[in-house]
Length: 274
Ligand SMILES: [Zn+2]
Ligand SMILES: [Zn+2]
Image 1 (tube, rainbow, N blue to C red):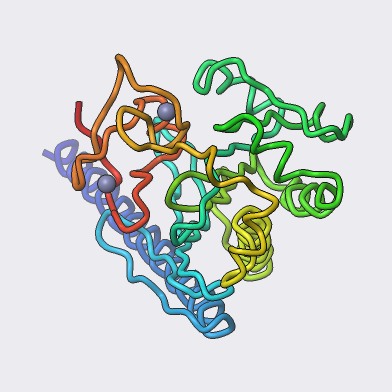
Image 2: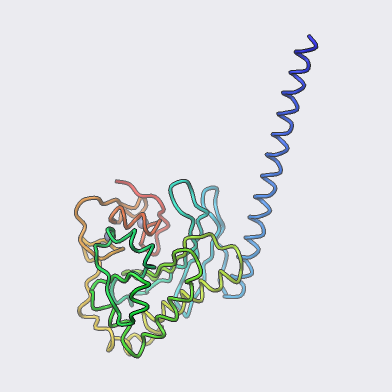
């Protein structure tokens, strides 16, 4: 009898401790979320944008104008199968000159299979060693990084070098600048956002001056996702494609995995179906 009571008391104590630990964990995670939301609000205010409320399964983000283009900032805290990310997506507004990807060499090697073995050179030996560059059409890489613009482009890309696996992606619809970590600090957010703004201007031309830029970037050669081509990499889709659950746009399954979401700018699709 006394032994049973002792066991019962012990079990009760264990349950009590578990409940307290659970409550404290909930309080910490909710206060972390509150402070992150406050950071987002300050950043939105600073840039004339607004906070996009998170849902039960989605994290809060930002919607903001960048040099007259609409942009979104999205976060993912990571899961068992996917790395965390922070990304800025800037709408190309019809000004995209093609498909371009810039990945750090170590990270890019893991994705070499993904976009084919293509690794273009822009003519700066150090930069070409440090980064994997892919483009459709291939000449787009050398045109964007032509001699008079090269240093500016390199300076923008290197600005997020200290973050985890930064990448620059240009497709038919948008410019995406992404790092594989969950940025929490306002200064880090500003670094990523400013970098995306500058890269969008670099890749798409200044807003409203597309005519001026079109002399440098021959738009006639461009052929992007007009049918049968993956919107992420710009190459033909044969086997291994998935569709966005929401807008049904087909992607290579690896390209979907790389972007972590649907590549259609206006689509919120984060899940794919076969
Ligand atoms: Zn693809
Ligand atoms: Zn979609």
